[in-house]
Length: 172
Image 1 (cartoon, helix red, strand yellow):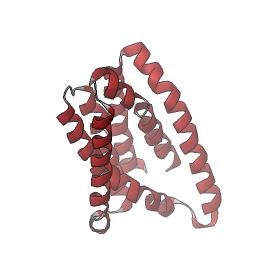
Image 2: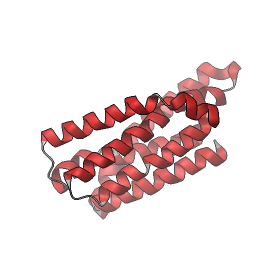
Image 3: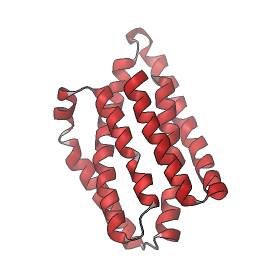
Image 4: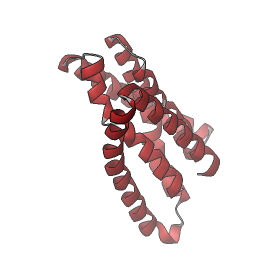
């Protein structure tokens, strides 16, 4: 479980530092546009969270996490092909819905996968993995964009997110 979550978090954090650069340099978004997109994202996180319990009861925390991560792959992928502010708004709504799934189910999925007798150590290792991925992704994402261009780096990050979601479903 820790290895597939390492893969997920690395793919997650590869894209995150690229978003504001793309918003401003490629889409030409203003502070107001970014603020509205952020508000739409968190509004849909809030609304999507209300359906989390129903989704988990029908499937499992692992399934909701895995499918949510696959859904998260669409955010950088669609962003790479966007050129209008309304597309950014639509992507923000989609991103909020899938983040509601992942953000709500991931911790329970992790806790279910932890050996009960080793839970504190397991969670400590998870925290180390998460922070290492945040650091590595924040450095590697911009480096990828420098080498291959920001759009291609976003597409690659989206592809890696999709693979990590599949890995959660298969091996998590």
